[in-house]
Length: 539
Image (cartoon, rainbow, N blue to C red; front, side, top):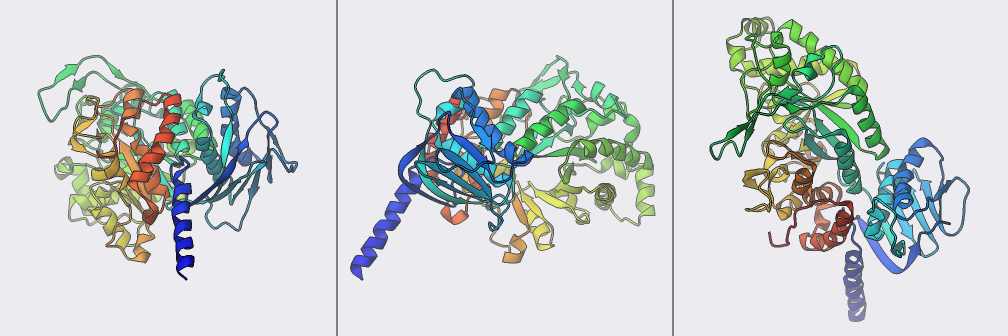
């Protein structure tokens, strides 16, 4: 018996060593390494059990890496082969639609997945197991052996919603930079891009029925400089702005779909609407005039609840719905002061008509009415946790950002929740007391370790209530971040930590081992040119 215990203990130690010997983020649910390697060469063939567009999308991104870096493209075929093959097979016995099983031997690679999503994620794992030179944007001239260590992996995500929010209103992100962000999300098996398209400081999406939303609302005359809350500030008086045409949006959405990233657009209402009201002041309570804001913060002028406003919002959403295949539209709903509503004849009449006793209930009426309109069009809504203040909207998913309280309340009431608490998941906050670069919000520090150790399911929830926690999202607000390099510096490597929060089981996580694996992944960052923050284990 003692010999058996010692043997079993040795196996556990050995298994832990084997799991730590490959650099994969997020960490797979099960991973065993074995001796040997599989070598990819120009004769390697990818075979598909189902030869359709989704399956070809699942392998094309990985194949494109070889075309660029290695100078050869792998044949994709539906004809079975026995060796020098990467065999991709759909397997409906797997329970999770994003699950995959991966076996790498010296002669072949076998991938099973329930859906093409799982096939795609298996290839992202293989990508991280390859030499980092695979990320090169030009032909690699030095001799590189494109080898993959022999492993057996069983993997699936802990949460179905694994997202990052990019704020393009405070500072605009050009179309090609959006594509780069999407590539990096896919690299980490993140599947949601929340696109914050409208706010007080800029309206960024073309609406053909209301062209002034972009011609006026898309540009501000000046922008405040410096950290607004900590010291005296000056103004940058250069006109600033930009927007996406509907063709741009279609292109970005299609690009994301090929990488199995779902884009959820956010159209803010009823607050954070000054840019829209600068273009169309008739939909405010006071009638304006307004200018697109160059300051950060919360502003009192929001959409009025008169009938013409709802027609305005419905017209906008008609065009938005046509552009985004996602089943969700994010309506914002946060930081909407109701002081104008208190003194607005139209809003007070509306309250009497609807038998409402306070302005918070009027906001719920506003959200419910838009939600009903979107439901008819086959869309569901997400809103920031302020939408709870007048009573929970009918079928909304709540995004909990002011800590976890709103999310807990919603989950206990039977509503779906995305956890995005600002004390853990606001990646515009400093990563250390100095942050390396003087960008971002210095008012809070969220270290790599703090982000990594977050768990989206509060202990106060029962098992049934916890089922309503659909996932987790990190947010990048861009008041103090204006370039691609700055954005990547604030996002990485914390996005790697996020990916493990969203994908890996809580009981399997270990920050020290994560940092060890991160060293291998950072080699890929280096070739990709990601200007990431150099975090240390002890920060």
